[in-house]
Length: 411
Ligand SMILES: [Zn+2]
Image 1 (cartoon, protein in one colour):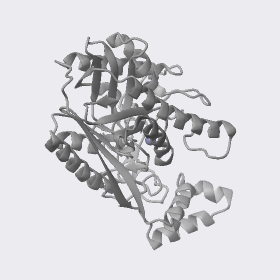
Image 2 (cartoon, rainbow, N blue to C red; image 1 turned 60 degrees about the vertical axis):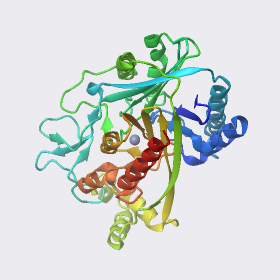
Image 3 (spheres, rainbow, N blue to C red; image 1 turned 180 degrees about the horizontal axis):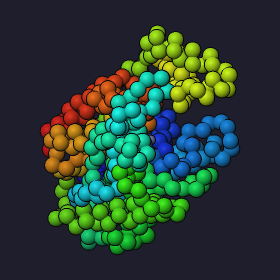
Image 4 (cartoon, rainbow, N blue to C red; image 1 turned 30 degrees about the vertical axis):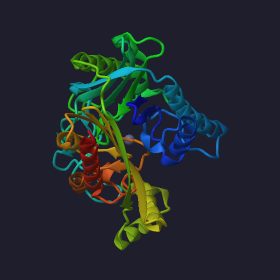
């Protein structure tokens, strides 16, 4: 939580695959009632750990329903506690690269190696194509190697909090049936040792723009790891990198200007064509087990998604965008599994010297490929994994740049 005397804002990181607006708005409302901070001055992003409990179970298994209550209360409590602990502080920001743990997971393949997609067609790129040099040609996009940090100290230079941001989907390597906060949680655990934080110090790792980025080194073979080992390795390396960034902060300042903007953006849902619906119905009409086995992988799953998208009652979805200014640092918050191209573009075009982009922020409305990546196809672009109009990344980027310009003008 940061407060410059005029603006108070809260930034929360949640160990979840991707909590939705319903559950997060509930938490913000409770926190707002207690602290007086408006809900539109609260950014809550999910880490995207793939080994967390469901976040929005209102019925079903008792533990899942109980967890929803705990999640709402916990998010609210974290904001209330941070508000109660406000004290004179100084803030700084910097970035340092960790290129060796991020890999673009969408690849062009060697001729003849592309399997049919669930719709029975050939994409130009494939997600997670394995590691065989006989199959792999070249990745379809870049990576963003930077870990950007926001560091908060008290006036005696004792660390209060450190917020980090890295564009890595998650790490994984958790045994079946177990829960884990993945490397995000392990980063929070080891980071205090890097800056000598005491028991009140809070470190957080947020997910950046990692929709097409993961931790699989496609062109080399990594030795096998025991459970949790790769999580620990990435957490240690990212904590080291955050420390290198920390060393770059020349001065923590207490006279920074804060600002925060929120916009609600209405987007069109993607609708399948009549031809696509007819194809989906034909795929779902296949009942014979052997015939189903001959369909492309996941054909019936995506046929169902196609029908669902055709029958969806709503034409539009309204999504929440946020932009924050902390002195010379800008934070953009996007409620999608945002592609790295969008993050790099925002960083380049931002009017602020330093910008970080948080994905899975305030909601998770599916994947957000750029229009160029939509043309290449692949898992993240398939109707069902992707739900909104194909130029969404352009609309959101334009809005965020306007919001950043407004924040810049305020200063
Ligand atoms: Zn994901």
